[in-house]
Length: 202
Image (tube, rainbow, N blue to C red; front, side, top):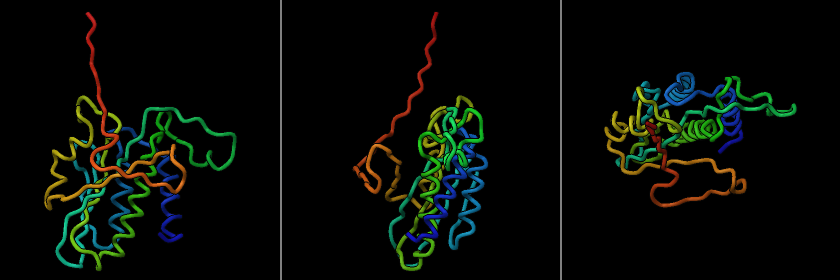
């Protein structure tokens, strides 16, 4: 990770933090993601996946046959009002969208994944197999018309794990409870629960 890539990731995260978008309405975020990916060598970029703004970038590496590895980042924000700080750098990238905030770190996830995409593009001639980078809309909330089961369900139903068939999929989540620099890893699913309950009172 070079200083240049790190600086770009930080600037991207701050831009996205200032311009958050709710689940299934990540239009500008998806457009930024697709434009950044198309500016890198080797990526085949598909936009508008699922009834939100899903983006998938396929990188066919030049080192020979190998597995298809998927990397996934979520893009949506939460319906929360962000309060500006008492001056200082935070105010420069506080949310500009009333009632919407990147309170769960998805701005960071997108910034990290775009940095990873840049690093992988440079390394692709020496790598084997295929990398599929998935930018998922609507991780936080479902939508009764657009996607009653949320963005992951819609992306899978749209076939993002096929053509080529994904052998392994990796995701990440920022976790502010751990010290800076620590990476925690677990096998199998983790933090994968989102339920909406509708109750009729008679």
